[in-house]
Image (cartoon, rainbow, N blue to C red; front, side, top):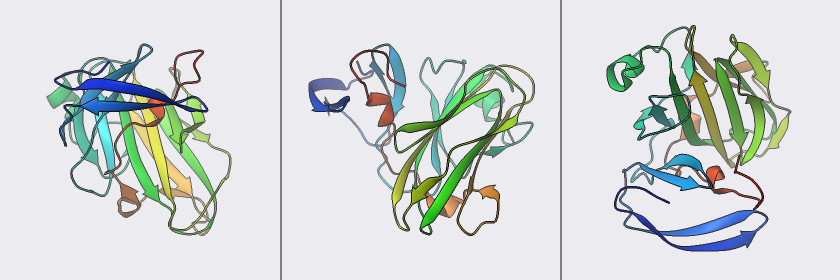
Amino acid sequence: AIDQSASITDAQSLGNGLVQLTLSGISQDTTYNITLLGETSPLLFPSSSTDGLNGFYYADLDFVGTPIHRIDATIDYVDVWDDGITELSLGTGDDNFSVQWHADVIVPETGNYTFRTWANDGDRLWVNGERVINDWQNSGASNQDSAAISLTAGQRVRLRMEYYQDGGTADARLLWSTPSSGGFVEIPQSALDSCAPAPVTALTWDGSENPD
């Protein structure tokens, strides 16, 4: 199901657990909620490309309700949200909210990459539709690393990060280690493209259980 004035007019299996949906009544730069097997995620078709990530902010822990959308330059929040979006727009202060971020990252050089999240409370990360980090629990901020992933210069890689904050300090960071960085660094805004429709991985289903 999809909300507002949009509708799903057709659904076709593509094999390998993928379903192609045909939608009507879609407007650019409008955020829709789409629900598949009880899992609800935002859907957005941007009209123009902007460096950064699509951020969808929810006033609860479980991505329920209509999110507030904005473009975030990076994911680098330590202790508090520096611009007050959770307090001014969501009305939740620094607790009891959740966020989904979506973007394509343009790979700068060929080699092995490792992604790292650092969050209080829960976080999980998908790279090209594969969940590579899963720390979905109340906890203090700690480093969570993916396995090394081989990428090619110029390749577009789909990123999706989910985060919730239940209590304590509101921390969320996304870093990577590149072939030449010598350690973990912030993914630069110039390498992030928010123009990709979000999400795609939420529509992946193996036919037996709720999608990841």
